[in-house]
Image (cartoon, rainbow, N blue to C red; front, top):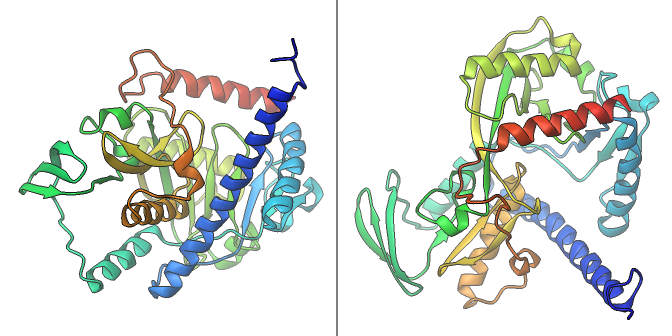
Length: 359
C-alpha cells in the first residue's frame, strides 16, 4: 500500500537519486569552467579572458527569494562564492534600478568567442590535425567502424563520427534533431562610449544576466568602451536592423543612460534548447554527439567535446555524468525540428514574466 505514497521508500529513493545526479551535474559544470581555463592557458590562446564574475539580476521580488536558495545550494555544493545582492546594494554591480536585487558568482568570466575559436584552430593545425572547410556532409551511410560520408568535396570514410551541429542540426541526423529546439539569439553592440560612462554602468566589469524566462544578457566588450547586449527580440527571423531597434529598447529599459548611443553592429545565430534544459552527450544511430547548450555553451560544449573524444579513445567508456542522461524528444506531436510553436510559447513566457514582475 505504501508504494507511490508521498514520503514512501520508493519516492525517497527517487529523490535521493535525483539529488545525487544534480550534484554530479553541477560538479561537471564547474569542471567545464576549469577545463576551459586550463585549455586557454595550455594553448596560450589570446581570447581576452577576464574572470570578473557574473551578476544575475532578480526580475521580480519573488525571483530574489529564489536566488537566495540558489546561492546557498551553489556554495554548499561547489563553493563558487555566490552572494546575494540586495536592491540597496545593487548599484555597486550595475547602474540600474531595473532589478529587485540579485546574486553575484565570482567563479565566472567572459572572453572573445571568435578569438577562442581562432586559437583552437591554430592549436589543431600545430598538432597536425587535417581540417576540411566548406565540406558540407550530404549523406551518412554505414555503421560505427565503417561509415561512408558523401560531402560537397567528395566521398570519404570514417570509423567514428561526431555530430556537433547544435542549433544547426538538420535532416542529416533526424533522431538528434527531434531532441533540439533551435532558437535565435539576437545581439547588438554599441559604438565606443566614454570610459567613465562604462565604468559607471558596470563598475566591476561583470557579465550580466537575469532570472526572467525570456532573458537578456549583456556585458562590456574587450577594452571596456562598448556594451554588447543580447536577448530574444522575436521568436522568428527578422531583419538585423529591426532586431537592433527592439534590442536597443530592451537595453535602454535596463540602462537608460544609453538612450542616446548608436548601435554599430547587429547579428544573430541559432542556439539549441532541450526539453530538460540540460546539455547532452551520447550516441544515436552509431554516431557520437554533444548538443543542447541552452544558450550558454562556450565552456560546456568545449568540455563535452573533450569528453566525447575521451569516450572514443577509451573504446566507449565514459565517466561523464552528462553521458548517462536520458535525452528526451521534444514533446510536441509530429515535431521534426521545425519549432513552429516558438512564437506562441515565447509570448506565453513573456506574459508570465510580466505577471511575476507585477506581483
